[in-house]
Amino acid sequence: MAKRDFGRRRVLVTGGAGFLGSHLIDRLLDRGDEVLCVDNLFTGDKRNIDHLAGNPRFEFMRHDVCLPLFVEVDEIFNLACPASPVHYQHDPVQTTKTSVHGAINMLGLAKRLKAPIFQASTSEVYGDPSVHPQTEAYWGNVNPIGIRSCYDEGKRCAETLFFDYHRQHGLDVKVARIFNTYGPRMHAGDGRVVSNFIVQALLGEDITIYGDGSQTRSFCYVDDLVAGFLSFMEAGSDVHGPINLGNPNEFTIRELAEKTLSKISGKSKLVYQPLPQDDPTQRRPDISVARSTLGWEPKVELDEGLDRTIAYFRSALES
Ligand code: NAD
Ligand code: UDP
Image (tube, rainbow, N blue to C red; front, side, top):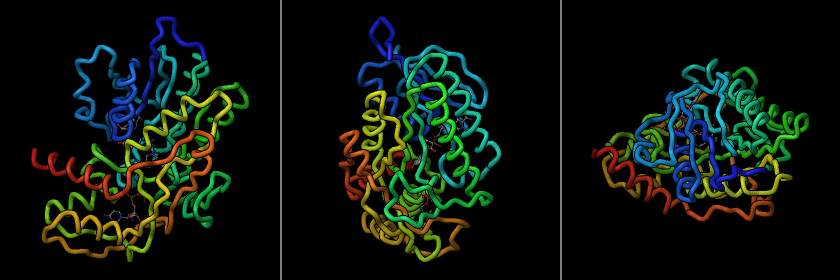
């Protein structure tokens, strides 16, 4: 791809005021890029990017990706979309619009600029998987009309658009299927399991396990994930994915609850609540493609990542 002649890359990150986007922006700025962060602040928080306010290579634009965007950049990371079930089910029509119209608008921008474009897709494209662990070749088991469908099918349609723009217009697309990721700057109140359990334990509240806690997830620490994003974008213009990015170590939700409790001594107890509709029973990425194509694999074990995340929430709750 042709770089701008002053040698420094100008990178657009949509959803940049969110959890993953703000960490990605930190890494891009660290390596010397200019960053344009576009976010409508639906679930994002300006506090995630406050520390960048004086940086002359950083710019924030409040904008909804459902509307066209006319800017000049060299690379695009499309992360804009609410990600937690509580948030994406809050306004499901808007969630699908964000995934689909957002993809169309960002792909149109990439086409005009001839810029590579990365899509934050998700393990949710596999639905409640009948293949375990999930490889990229698996087409998934997704309910098209359930309460998770606005997100799952929105992201699946976005993948379709990315690959059609690639085939039809020769766009250099990079589609990553992200598995559950955690770390500092997660929302305390977005209902995701790691943040919920840590905040509940720190506040001495009961730890809410949905169902019997035997469902599994595989948790990736945010720094590892962002390293995967950067490796993917740096991969050659013949690498398009989809590529699973996640940590293949699998835990039951009950194990996660017990681990969190053991790290935060307090008076919390485990309590069991109904399992939400269409909650996947198992999830673990097969990351052979990421290993062989990108030379990437996660390094941070759950114990270490949880310690760092607990430290973040402890200080966030204190302040
Ligand atoms: P997040 O909610 O913290 O961040 C999403 C950001 O997108 C927020 O800042 C939000 O304000 C912004 N946004 C939402 N709708 C928008 C719109 N219409 N226009 C502009 N901005 C908009 O979530 P996250 O965990 O940082 O997730 C980032 C991306 O990664 C999402 O696309 C999500 O689907 C994907 N993903 C995340 C995970 C995970 O475990 N965190 C897993 C799979 C996929
Ligand atoms: N979960 C839970 N208690 C909580 C929040 C979530 O038991 O307080 C469960 C949820 O039902 C799911 C798993 O933890 O089985 C992961 O949920 P999360 O919302 O973090 O992500 P996703 O379901 O999208 O993987």
